[in-house]
Image (cartoon, rainbow, N blue to C red):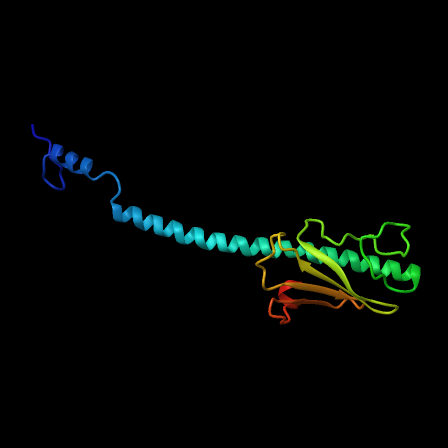
Length: 163
């Protein structure tokens, strides 16, 4: 008795031989899959890098807010704003006990302006802190009224994107 495929009316052995010859992927199929993976990986890597750069900006924001709070404390004690960072308690002349380099060593803090009634604190990225190519937020600042500003590498206002 000859077993035949009911649909194609061929002997079953011929059908099995054809199926056995069709296993695997063609070169075109593999190349298409690699192109899709490469495009997806490129997009994912770019998105991840933008996310990391934005998260690093929090280092500058936290440092500035801590220094501004210390400035207000200093003002209450001395009747003026301090013009120096990295001071130890009991130093003469007194200053702020805030480090000039942020916690994760990505930004440098400085007091740009300080006198009896006003102050301005700034944060600039350190060259080796991972923010060297963040052209959107090159300079953060905060003043005595709590006004926050940010500038890009061209000097344009980028406060809404950075703070």
